[in-house]
Image 1 (cartoon, rainbow, N blue to C red):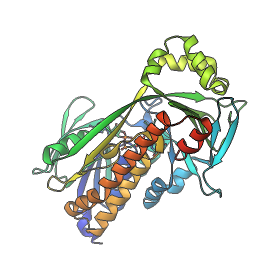
Image 2 (cartoon, protein in one colour):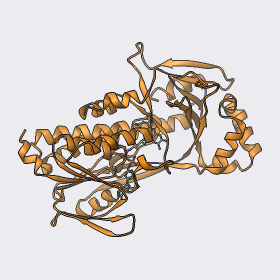
Image 3 (tube, helix red, strand yellow):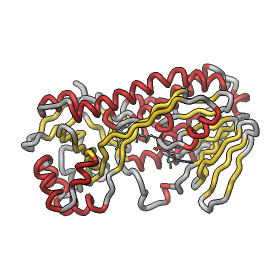
Image 4 (tube, rainbow, N blue to C red):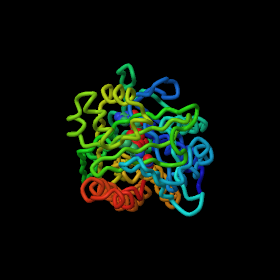
Length: 388
Ligand code: FAD
């Protein structure tokens, strides 16, 4: 590797979420100068982070990418292994379905915020990475190698001498919009009727209220409830439900009736009062999937990774894992082309588009499968939750 050659380069990584923070570490490790721009203020300084607070299932492809920048062990230490799904039937009976035959076949439950904070702290450790919080990407001029951002005070901030823009700014990516001005991009987005809302199962008598090392699932044909364990012995519980049902539940009695009919044991775990308070103080959040091709512009020195390139339904639990894998594939190409950005971005896009379309489709089919094609709980249990 020609280290001298890459250390003279500077990139802007836009988005300090899960993918952007990790991607910055990848560039940082290779000695490339990185400006990491994040729209929000530093989540490490905030008591409450507004927005998505879900915990995530981390699996092999995500862990491989974390390993590349030597932080797999750190993240694993902050996660809880889940060796099996625990299926909650309508009659409140439960039965586990193991992920494999040995204990090393497991996925990890990790809090999104903790994961994001750890990755930002890792990025901060590289002397060649500068993080700019409260910087909203606005535009990119590849000829002048100049990007424009707006800071938290609404002030225009220009950054020059950038060799590339790496867009990791999520489903509603501004970098992807900018990319479309330079490249003929095929783009599609889909919302599904299902939305999601989170609840919390608090510890009971200082212990986990349900079996700890499991991903708990209440599969109910066109909707479901899932719960993942947290380090503080709580569970984050997510209800996926078509928006028309969310809208139809208008009163406390209707809500408790609904839970009593479909998730009777969850009432005990979450608590009636908590269900009511949480439900009527939250908004159901939408689920979007995105496909685009290509994922780059060689002439404009731009590339997009993560949800910016391929947001997907969460039912395969692969959105973040695929986003992390994007970093690995990008760096496979950068290493192969000795950090020639033009060739590496093309190689990355050629490799990644088909695979990302496939996982977006699989995630969508799994959603349809869960919603429409299931008639018996036992059948549902086997078929639908295989990938969670
Ligand atoms: P994001 O996490 O959205 O981060 C984008 C960042 O860019 C944000 O910090 C944002 O503030 C910033 N930004 C946005 N616009 C700008 C701008 N103009 N300028 C500067 N910064 C900007 N995946 C899994 O692998 N496992 C799971 O178990 C899992 N569960 C999920 C459950 C649910 C309910 C949902 C909705 C998703 C789930 N996912 C899961 C998917 C996962 O959340 C995403 O794939 C992942 O967050 C993508 O990371 P990202 O960094 O690309 O995007």
